[in-house]
Image 1 (cartoon, rainbow, N blue to C red):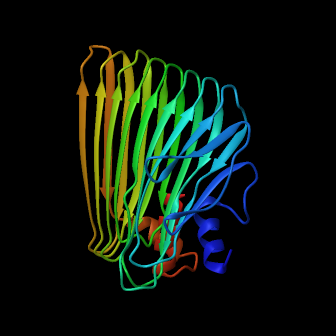
Image 2 (image 1 turned 90 degrees about the vertical axis):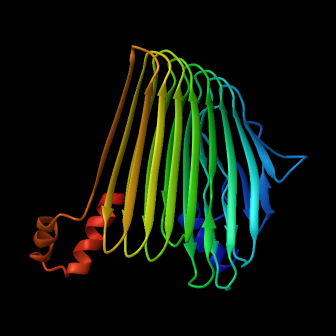
Amino acid sequence: MDKIDQELLEQIADLHTIPQGSYSIRKNGKVWDRNSTSDIEILPKKDKEGIDVIVHKNVKNQSVHIPVMITQGGLNDLVYNDFYIEENADVLIVAGCGIHNVSTQTSKHQGVHTFHLGKNSRVRYVEKHLGIGNQGEKILDPVTNVFMEEGSTMHMETVQLGGVSHSVRDTKATVADHATLVVEEKILTTGKQSATTNFEVVLQGKNSHAEITSRSVAKDHSYQSFDSQMIGKEECFGHVSCDGILVGNARIDSTPKLSCQNVSSTLIHEAAIGKIAGEQLTKLMTLGLSYEQAEELIIKGFLS
């Protein structure tokens, strides 16, 4: 592992060395290293680029890391990963992609992740995206599909740390009886970067539940779009919250759509977009911080 590899792995997967247990590390469009255990198997796909991750029944307190690194310009990497979480399993899945691009060419990664959650299974999924290098564009377009069986729980934490030129994040989920989906999204854009988020959640099970929270900061001339659609087909509860901060000449669009198709569906959407409050800046500046330092501290706290 060279210095760039170490920096990317630390920031996108909190790894300082090769992890224990099951993992699959991808670099520049190829498998760099991979390991399976009896609890969590990782199998290469036979018909296309990607892996099948199988978390066996009743497995508890286990984790699997599947980070992606790109350090070449001009690379267009597309990978399909399927996750099969068997009944009563409980697992942490750490993904993410880091692109280091110092060429004049565009580097792009698209991961199509499909989750199949068995009955009463639990998943915490952490996905971080990062771009570094001040030359060619760095594009990340993740696609996430989630199919949840009865009583299952999925907690997704998605973070775009900065440096990504353009991104389109598409997430679709189908939630069954007594299942719960929680999504926490945090995005930072600067310069002329753009980030688009599309959510579609179908609450088709009785007593199904979904909580979608997005926090974003758009600076300079960057642009962000948040488009959410939540459909309640049974007795269920769904809540979508979108909070954004604008700095400079940036722009954020938020478009909610709620569809109640059952008299017992309860769906809520909240959105707030604006600039940093002046009194917050003033208070921090009276403590000795410059305007820029105060602004960065507020943004850091907002996205933490």
